Image (cartoon, rainbow, N blue to C red; front, top):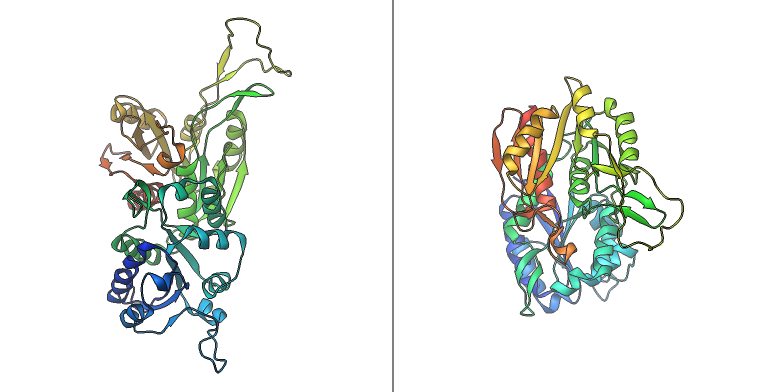
Length: 406
């Protein structure tokens, strides 16, 4: 599967380094040529000799290889690789990558990379949830890097939660999918809507929802990775996207309608994943409304239905995907939406499934990282998927689109 592919494996200091040996073995078995660059901290968890033996190549740690002045050329290593995979990447090295700090061989190789970079974080749950870590994740994604989400389970600290390095077989599968899928959507134009809309009440208040936009952003990144030309229309979101994606920021449902309708005719695949408000206040105060009465009423008017409009006007060669977030009778409600909006496919999730849709927990960051979906196609066939990271869900959605369009 990976025959002839040159993979540079970066390893950072983490107890999960023990999984790196198995990962090297699996990559070699799949036919890849593997070179390993370790940080000094990583070498305290697993020996260079082990990794050198498994990879059949010298392991690189320092810039200077020998006292005679021979050095490990980070530029050559960056050029050599078809793919750079950092597994595990620690919170420390993640921060360095996010901010361009270059104080060791691994960070220098990263900054010299000519290829895609996959990052597989591993750290304790509180480190993973920390706002600085999440900000760094968004930053490295915005540079075009691909993040393999950590898994949930028992951690070395004894705590339970998100932070475990993805299993070697999972990482191998993602690497294989990367090479298999590369550029299979080249010359395809994709339009995606994502995130919530905020409907203004007055200058400081709005009506909105809990959508993070992460599902739409993940789909956009996956399409861009696979060679597509992607336009992402996003409601208010703290997320960043890679420079490969043309991003249009909006706030209200009407703004999203106008931006989407002006672009839809020039795109091949349209994916409406945004959680657009169904209603918006008729009157919007230009001044902050004071708290005077015990009750406060807002008269609302229905917003324009973007999905219905696109469905009624789409061309025969266009493929339209909608989303349905339900609280009850999810499949039946989604089937009706599939027909009424003239969709080619609908993605269904329900708040009845823990970890799917909008977060129902206090910890929005943890739940927003996963989704559990079913896909219904125009022939009413249903495909169900287990709970996965939104990166994996995006892959499943795109594979189904590819299958149905072929």
